[in-house]
Image (cartoon, helix red, strand yellow):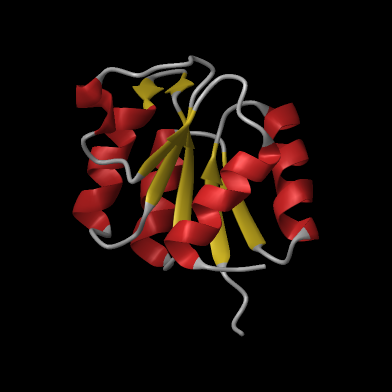
Amino acid sequence: MTQRTVFYVDDNPKAVRMLRFALEGVGYRVVTVCNAHDALEQMKQSAFDLVLLACRMPKTIGSELAREIKQVSPRTPIIIVSGESLLAPEELTYVDACVGKGATLDSLLGKIRRLIGGK
């Protein structure tokens, strides 16, 4: 099976390190950036199997970035990672799944596997 690539956009270096470690540990390749501008540039240059987005970052909201990513790559699934337990329906328009506050790593991995497969 081909190694799947997850593109993770988050401005929190600790969260990036932890999630990268966890995802690489189960066989995914992980590419990260820390802001919306770099995320859009990367999406224009590379193909990814899945995008993970932090819900809130400086100068952008994950749902707005999700809309812009879908314009560049309409078929790429997006999971938004939120520190909140619930997001408004309009924040989920361009998102394929949401992982909210209190979710476990197993829950996130389950959503990733459902969208793109993997171990």
